[in-house]
Length: 479
Image (cartoon, rainbow, N blue to C red; front, top):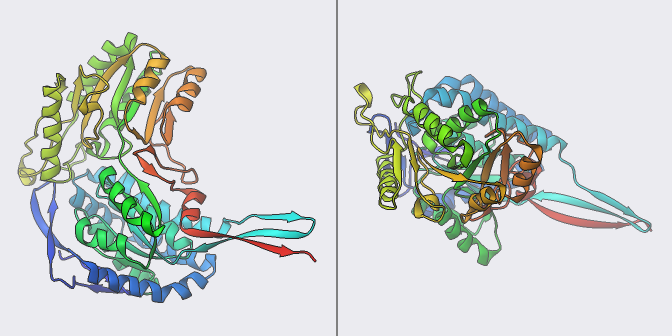
């Protein structure tokens, strides 16, 4: 397959003629090419977006919503093709693509289509005037999405940007470009006006940096690593361009001895290893109250040891492949470093050989490590793979201290039957999202984002609409 850019409503090849290989992580084989676009392609996309902006922003919100719902309808009609493409592109199980990724992409488009029609501005009356607020689209905005949840997070960004009346230049990850490319077929078939959504593929060093630097871009929404987020912030700050940065995490899962044990255990397995641990919200640091620690550790290791790593197309596979050979090597290097730090690998830490079509794929066993202190490198740096550490704690204060003992602050889970303990943890843990007795339960109306080096700004609901608009206060005297 040869992926192409979508610029001004037309599929185009990269102006440079340069291409990058697309690998299927489960087979280890190249199955396509993706453009390695550069500044010339970004210029063309920016020109198309600027030309389309006046007409698109002038549409009534209800009319923009029609276009978003048509695109959601298209995803529903092509559900299985998109699910299989997501599986082939990322190495995740087909089951997860069917139950999480593609349904959420549909929900994103429908949610912001509805919100665009109900979102309101404020007005304030005084004896001498009425003060009201306009929230106007910015113009051309950039949406840069990551490789772990490709269509899910691609639509999470473009939907509010388009609903608010902006024109978009989107750059999916060059590692997993397939579903964004297929969605462009839907853009054409559904009649979205040319130039409203432009999709330019390529590496961060070429397409990504050119996009962030382009003078036409008035806001950048980015999800990815903290290091890249810092670079983007440094490029945007001198021009006072808005930035929404959803970055890394080293999320704690805090388990108290009085928890409802079986639901906790089942959810902790999922929150540790869903999508091969390649979700920014996965709980990679499991903190367990000391009186429960031995029971939890032994039971957790036993269950993890039974998890099936295999062909993502096979229904019985619990884990598929990690996204690339380079990423697999990085994760294995992190496990080796944990051993050098004195960590005890209780299960996993090695490659899994899968037979048949997946014999050259990038598979790794889920890994559990104990015996490391809170300040060690393994417990400080994001691994972003199927690796978790276990740490005991004695009381609430120590649990909060350990939970907050990193430079990140994206999410946390707290497991306890005691309401006072749950509320105290939720208040004191430095995280943008705290789940109590649950994980990854989302309401798209709520703000989402991180603290500290986990990000800047919030996505979701009206927060996303506010980000993609400029606020103007108007005073109308009554006499």
